[in-house]
Length: 474
Image 1 (spheres, rainbow, N blue to C red):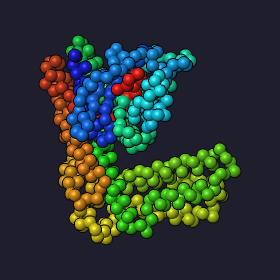
Image 2 (cartoon, helix red, strand yellow):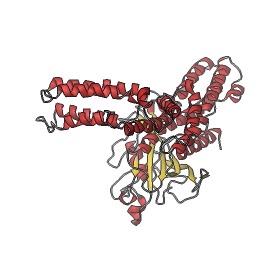
Image 3 (cartoon, helix red, strand yellow):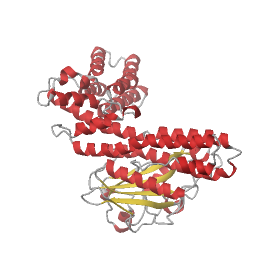
Image 4 (tube, rainbow, N blue to C red):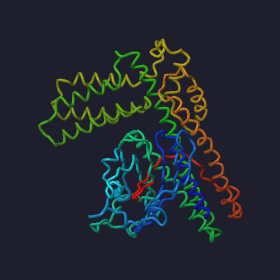
């Protein structure tokens, strides 16, 4: 096995470990490589399964699959008439995920189509890489694969599919567009970044033959790519912030229970949405005014479901909701009588976004120790970044307290412990990357320089999903 294949295998295993750590209801993860255009050969690469009742992972469990090496080509798994529909074909062609939240209704289950037997609960996510990152600026010469109608796929998109991830779940624990799928979608982007870094590493090894002549130019390009990769590696901070968001959500729910008479974000947004719906349908059904209403409703409903930091929610309100209301009221007299009420609700909404940080309000909660409340408020509204690494230790100590009324407290703590390992590895990665750059820049022996300062991609937890189209799928 070559060094690149070793790195790829380690990267896949790191991703699988991350998925099974982040997603408590996930039972098995399989990653498939998608080959170059136009063949798009789909091959099962790495698989890991959680042992029941433990965190131990069993690797490479042998199961029958059409995607075992050498896999299947695009012509074999793409959608076409009089042929079974495969989730793999959907993910690769559409560059969109596929969720089997009910195996009995899964129209892309090969087993169900051929045998009438339901498969299981799973989510599949394509891992996307930008064409320009992989092939350079000139992508016009790419030979795109064709669908069954002879039309080229991917021609009008800026991405190609580099891999597909499939995650199996316990029954009825996965739903389309739920929180798990959103986490998976975000983290699949990091897998695309890591795959891209491996391709770049492979290109670097090839370019070493004439490195002496191109040393300075190659060094600048490599430094740029490595820095980009380190920036993109910041996905781990997003995952930590997502866990903090759950703690913040629990705190705000505690406040809502303690002070039900206060005007909270969700109630105010619901009242604003009712004011819009009270005037629907509008005379211009399907026209510009109706579309403005639909966009405003969507923005308000999305904010109601989010658990963002107050500053982020303020920005959302000022940039995505307030201007839409202003445009709506200026462009129509439909809400003329309600203008004063709407303006008042928007002002109240702005104030409500900071209620969670109101220490005077928090101090009136009597059933939780004051010190615990103050710590809860402080940690709930932290934006975790590279210069706030000590916050993780504070969070872990905080979540140890059995008096803390946070649902899934121990699971959140366990996830943060795993993420802490990754966060602590990133500075080491940066140091090794910089050492390699310095070695190349000052003309040391290339092979020796890379061996002494190789920027190794650590086993990092990331979440992505892949489709599969086997008769007996992984």
